[in-house]
Length: 99
Image (tube, rainbow, N blue to C red):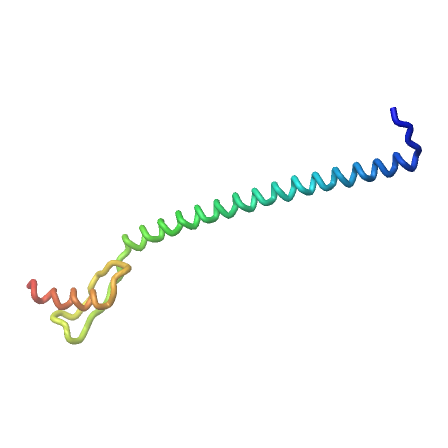
């Protein structure tokens, strides 16, 4: 078909190799970008599941607080994990009123 001398065939081969390298690099970079995006989405999903599990665990857990001082009944009060100290004081005040 084409009569190319040795020098022209070498140049054509080098150009073909360079083009193939660019195509492979482009495909590799694009695949790497998709993998990174997938991993980020997976990490976000796992973090949200962990947060939900942590919230559920905290809602189920209770803490014990010892209240003393100007309350009706001093002693240990059981509260939910996300309660405040004012809740403990209020519970200690109510204990005497109910009895």
